[in-house]
Length: 234
Image 1 (spheres, rainbow, N blue to C red):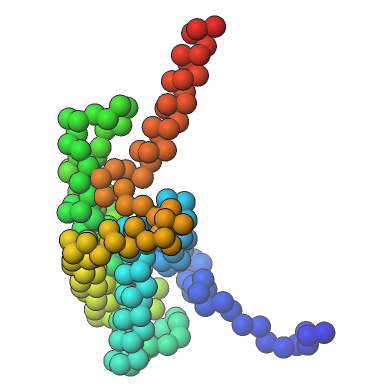
Image 2 (image 1 turned 180 degrees about the horizontal axis):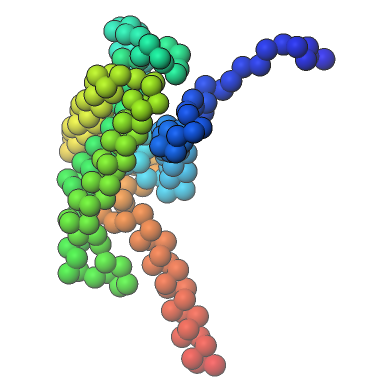
């Protein structure tokens, strides 16, 4: 039986210090959990859609985290004096994480995603226009900026540590986008998708040309159309 007097530890992965008397600090505490939430989103989308683009995005995210791990131990800069958190502070891992995600999302929506033009209406689905994609990109970047700012507000990092983290995440996103573009154009991705293991896990590459919900929605629409037609014939 464990000793009841033994000190307990906190799971630092989700532990956030904030001022309970400050509503903004309370909001920042939730913003600090955005990276963990994005990891759940990654895992859910990869499992449910089997889209290789999402898996590649997550692979780049993990590489970005590895870079942050190395940079912190190379620079060895402490957190602010009135700091909330353990370990080194330069660069901010939160800022680097969300910057990578937001910039990668923007690069995908603005440059890689190539849906039919809005005038081409495929059944009851209208693809997003370039303006809409730019709008969602701006939302992602604004959210990333809010998360990065919250790290300074909560005294986990200095402004410089957050700016360097954001810059590192941006560079990582651009670099990974270039690498995956080369992999696509060289034919290596098509080769990988044609391997037995990729076919076994039903890995696909459709999100570049269509929205995630499109294929499933069309199947549902087919079913409902067939049911309505069946009722009319009765």
